[in-house]
Image (cartoon, rainbow, N blue to C red; front, side):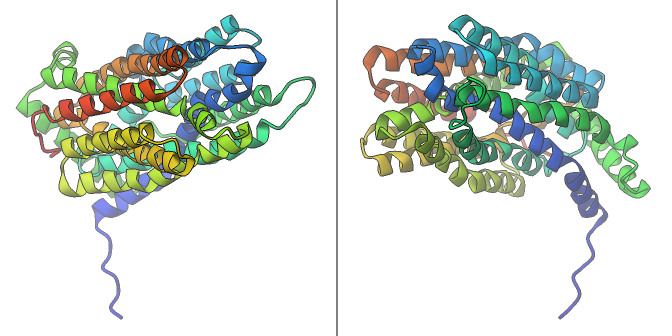
Length: 427
């Protein structure tokens, strides 16, 4: 058997960067998603114990995103201009503390305050990580890196659901399961935030774990990419933020977050309404759509990089998500409904890798950071609107049919709008 060809300098450098950075970033993002959406599982007990209506729970779940809005853009700009390592580590510690304290709420006002504070603490984390990845990955290969990092979203649902199911059964020191779910799931972020400060490397120039020639290669690639974009057109932050492509991306981001969190935060409640099963069984069933969506997210990121195409790799998943939501609305069968929710989850998550690679296809440097932050800021407003509208419509009608139709319409609109972007190759 002939010996395998040696890897090129580019391949060995990319692999080494991925092995060093992606595992920790994935773990942090898993914790981020668990602490963000575990309220959906806690809500199975909490809403009854604290006598919350659907509207109260939807508003409290969504107000997280209003807190998020306040620090999103300035925090992301600080990542680009000051220190990604320090800000990311500080955010992880801060949200871990707030998430843990959320387990001690006793009324609606405390619920609103806790969710608002959690949103403020998490605000620059996700867009900051996207900016951080742009310090290490050239455009060719970035969607794959983003896909690897963002598989944390379905992983969080896959592992978070059974852990949450187990914690819902705990009754210690006079506190019921939902209290302990929030308390225990918030603590790991505090520990890993400290580890992040010690482990992350700011930029390739400081990466002593790369060989000199590997450092030179990645720095050269990123410098060339930056120079090429500047040669085409150097945008100021203000020009980039009000650019036509940014406006379209921001609207699509609004629709995407609207669907993502309107669906994610209400999925356990919809499954419970459909099946009538216990909170523990519902929690476990709710993990199935996310488990199935995981490989599809990786596939979309890989194929987007392979074909150097972004728009259709965002539009098609949106349309698939709309199809799944439409099928879910058309059935009362538990198996068919769960299958439909799974199709919806494949589309909802499948759009992410190519979508969050798009800003760096048009902009670079602080302009790209500003665009990412703007997209996330507008998207986060959608993250508030989605859960609230689902809660409002379900409370008003007594079913989730109109709420699912609302999410379906958002998915179709987003899929159409993304195709109005001007085609732009990523290199």
